[in-house]
Amino acid sequence: MTSTLESSRQEDQVLLLESVPHPAADAAEPFIVASDRRVILAYPIAESDFERFGPFNPDDDPFCAVLFPDAAFHRLGPPGERDLRIHPLASNGLAAYSAHEVIHSSLVDELSSVSLPGLGKRHFVITFMDSTFECVASDYTVVGVYGAAEIASREAFALVR
Image 1 (spheres, rainbow, N blue to C red):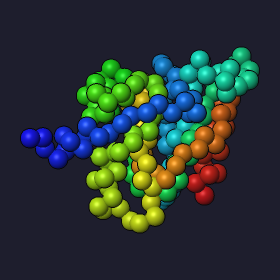
Image 2: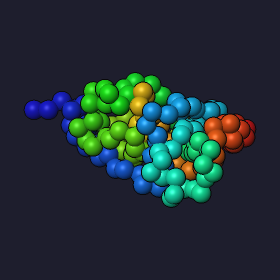
Image 3: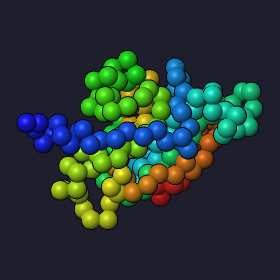
Image 4: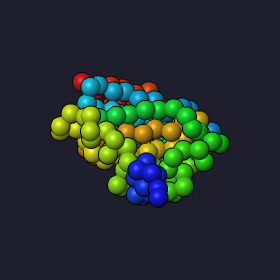
């Protein structure tokens, strides 16, 4: 007989989000700008996505900003790429330097018993070199891909007001 936690983790289905730029390896760290209900994650994008989300100048350091509205939960911290195998979703297909949505999320189930009505019920995970970002929100939107972190930062702060 499996425990409730084990059976709920088996329901977690990790899907890649191809519409979100892949994070760059060995680049600047991601950062979060958040208000009570909105979270914006900004991070440098992988060079392999420059053509898809560009064009960029040769001296640009492209960053994207992703908005998560109606956020019920967010965190940015370990594990990073080297220790990703210890993440509870690693065996379900969580990949390094990628954006994911978790369908049938056990985290959403846990939060639904304590969260306020009207908050998001979708679970997103984006993996980086030294950290992993997780958020439960109603949706996600890539609000922009910018030539530098300073521009992404300015746009992120404008969006949380």
